Length: 339
Image (tube, rainbow, N blue to C red; front, side, top):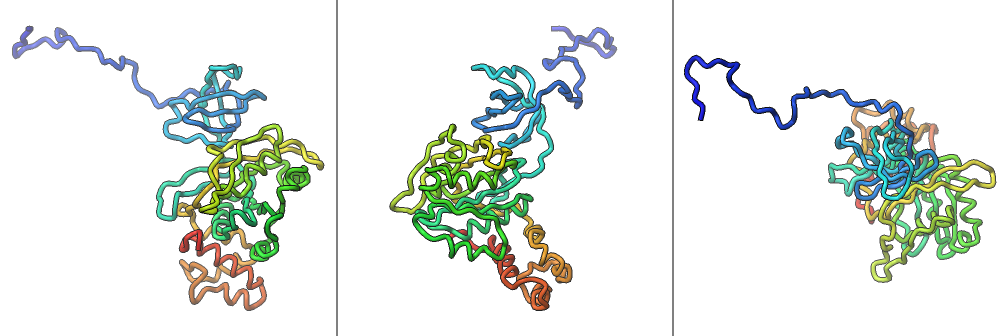
């Protein structure tokens, strides 16, 4: 064993090299200017299926992205093997800026938000008129999420052969929502699918709803060449069984008026938490009430004494039913969805 005295010559001391090498660390990341543009179709256990230059490519997230999530609908930059051949794997090196993000939490007390889809243009809220019974509170919550994300809401009512659509449509008439009513027979003969497709062409539409409401059946009718598994409603609980396990983006065939678009099928939801949403943003979807809200006291939740919207409506600037609808939506976080 070598020993050193008080007057050690520093040049004589040997330093063990670092296992990490001697290259200095840097925060500079490659720009990947030659990366190809891709569109994320589905995500499954860390693998992303992307559409790149007309080919379906399997990719994984590059380490340089860190914890940034990649979700269905993302526009990404992809490098590596882009042939789409079996057992090949590309890398996603960049996620482009998102134009919209649809999110939810597990419940209203959950601090962790979950991104459902990115870059969608409209949210199709699929609700059965019977089997299972419609749940207006879930519709309200989806509307709040759509308004917060800047998505155009579309109400799609299925199973019209089992119950009339009038009562439910009357509830949402003051909101001026676009809607379409379909039955199982209309979807089977193609007429119902064409009516829905007309409202989706040229846009990216994400479908959300409870299990068993006919969401995947609707998507199968819209894109006949891509059939996804469907399930029945549980006779005991009255709830649907989960058959769709991951979100999937599918290209729509051209409609009779031309154009195309994308439809994104998502797994059925049992709840739609809104803990992540600033409810003050919801009033932006009510332009006839938003101007009157400027006179409200600071911090007004628009459902308390002194709210200026009461006087605004009384003066005839907006319909009372519109104010009632706004307050119903703002109160969704204070009530359970089944109430």
